[in-house]
Each structure stands twice: as C-alpha cells, then as structure tokens.
Length: 281
Image 1 (cartoon, rainbow, N blue to C red):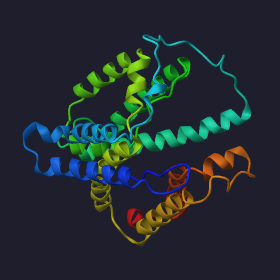
Image 2 (cartoon, one colour):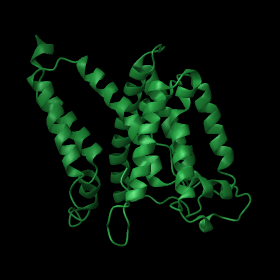
Image 3 (cartoon, rainbow, N blue to C red):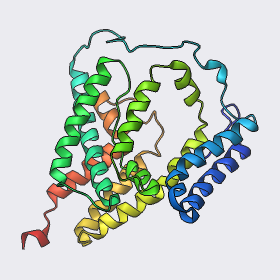
C-alpha cells in the first residue's frame, strides 16, 4: 500500500493515506454492509479511491491513453516460436510454478466455497487443461496469459460470489474490452496504491483460508518444520537484491529469484526425504 516518489525515494504521504483509507473502507463495507452491498465492497473501494486520486491530482498521466478506436488481435506479433535448450528449461520450471499455483488456487477456493461439488482431482484435471489451452491461445495472440492465484479465493470469500456464472460474464466482458485500446488505457491508469489496498484486503481472507487448511493436518514436528523452513526460505529469498544471482546460469536465476517456486520445491523435497512416521504406522 506504500506509494513512493521515484525521484527522491520519499514516501508519498497523500497516496499512502488514500490507500489506507481504501483498505479500511473495504473492510468496513464487508463487515457492516447489508445485503448485496457487501458483495461490492472491493469495487466500491476501488472506485472511491480512484476518484479521490483523480480529484487530488495524484492519478497517472492519461495522455498515454491510445487514441486508436479498435484493435483486433494479431497472430505471432513477435515472430514464429523458436525453441532452444534455455527456453525448454525455463518452460519446465515455470510449468512447475503454474502447477503449484493451480494446486494452491483450487485448494484455497474449495475452502472458500461453502457448498462445493466434485472431487479435487476432477477440478485439478479441468484446471490444468484450461490453463494449458489459455496459455497456448495467449502465446498465439502475443498477450499475457492468465495465471491462477490463491489470492482469488480471498476475492471469492470477500465478495460472497460463489457462482461461476458472474466469472464467465466478467471474462467475456474483458475479452470485449480488450478490443478497444482506449478503454484498456483508461483502466490501466488505476493507481497502484488503490489496487494494492484492494488486494491487501482480500489477503486477510486468504490468510484465514490458509490457517483453516493447516488446522486440518497433523501439526507434528515433521509437518511444522517443513512448513516453517519452506515458508522462511520462500519469503526470505524475496528480500535479496535482484542482482544477487546475476552471475549464475539462467536456470538458477529463475529458480532462486522466485520465492514461491523455491519455497514449493523446498517443501516438496523435504516432504519426500523426511518420511511421515504417523502415516506409516
């Protein structure tokens, strides 16, 4: 939620206070709101915070918004795909990252939805297939693919929108909006402190979901140690300067600079090397 001045590195007090206000406003609407208004707490917080930023003149420069009316997607804008050893290794590493994200997102969402149907295996199978198709289409049309995030469960829990129908409608709306560069440019001017404050509000629900998931497992010495080591390494690696791993091969740079990926690998390795005595008895 902190916004800083790029030139002198000082804290922008006004932006910081607005982001704190947006964060508290979302929580207040979600706790005290009645009826449907609770489901729109995030949207209301973003709109009000964005409006305040514009009124105070703190919003981004809108002169960069494209004047082009319609822009249709193009195929392979940057040329045909080329494969080499480095790209293959990177793709494999990021596949593990995407699978771990998908696994965590589905697990968290199952905790957030009160009346869930179907098995976890079925959802994981459908999620990986959908993600694969999405990435193929994204690569073909030279755009950024959608990545599943566990924080999505926080949005679901906070907005109380458990049906998939609104999600499909929103996705179709975003596809339609993407054809109009001017609208996309305006949406891209959303102030970062406002977006960060809204995301932070959802992480409260995400943390609660994570704690409830952990409570379902036996919190013995083995499990607590694995969780603690993976968590500390994953979080700690993100505090290192970005140039720390510049001298290493690219494969190690990608692995060691990503806290989520490294923490996931550490947890998987420890889980395999340290046998669970309780489950074998």
